[in-house]
Image 1: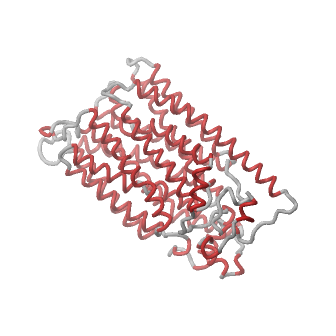
Image 2 (image 1 turned 120 degrees about the vertical axis):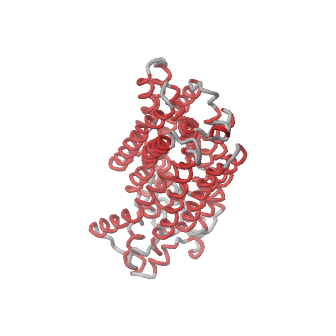
Image 3 (image 1 turned 90 degrees about the horizontal axis):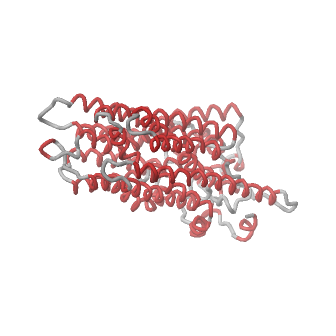
Length: 499
């Protein structure tokens, strides 16, 4: 690791982070940030960033799951009854095609997130996905619906990796897990609000015989709200600390200085082939990819079929919309608690595993409890909402444990490509109204996730021990301002992996 610094000559104009020049031109490149200043800056950053990351991420989840609500509200019915007449396999493909769009564009959009202004490019994608979602209100057949879902996935591909970059750019490692947990937990908020919104629209249009049907209104409302939020995002969210209009010039520099300890910088637009190769050869990359694949096969099932799953327990279509909302509350509680406790006790990986265990228990309940026990099976379904703790922990580790901007965007792209593949596979495991096969697959996948979390924890701990030994060497010398040289986590001996 140390040898990489010595053997590879670093040319500052090419390799250095944007923050390097800004700090070098002020106070010899190093500013002090006392505790009071740090708290003041953190509060200001939270106020301006977190509400918008949270709300947009909620819309990101809601926009994907609107199809599930629409299925209960009548989109699958014949045209004479207000639907577009979808068979069971066609509905499954609508669930999967979203992730084909996501898959096709994931690596290119990660490269664009590195190369283009982060705030502006993210806002553009939010606006475009809102417009695309609204177009669902005018589809008349399966082919048109497939096209809309494909482009919806394409535009939403930038959201999760972009938000991970925002978090690593603005927050210290000790703050990142909690913040990613909070904005990710708004998937649960979307689950609650989406279910209530769909329920309200369904009830309001229950007796209407003419005019626009309920599921089209749902797509219009969610799509137009997303467009409005994208415009606000464009105005409020900066590309990095250096162009944040809500920070003074001195506070912009201090906001950079406070994340010096991350050893990651704030952004680098230069594509570095050696970092791409390192990402592909790093075992941690493939442990992350494996987790994404295993975790999202169950996610592909629950995202598209949760309302239908509850309906299969014996509830009415309208009841299934309402009774699905507690699942979101469980997701919020488990995500926020595991993220907070993980950062507080420095054990983000192990603490996140409890959510995976709870989801396994919930799945066992659904499989084992007889069909006649509606409430028991419903309780089991609710527990599956806790599974996202592990996925979000891994996402936060990409922000915290992968350094070098080309390497980080590459790992994020591979992780989310696996996420797409899992979500493509998931809906295909369900055939008709029999969910038992899918439930067994969910249990197997989450068991694999639990083992993978333990392996990742062991690997990161072992890497930290190796770095500690190198730094203890008598001839070890830290490079000046190496925090801003866009070094990878492997080549930077000062880099410490978060557990």
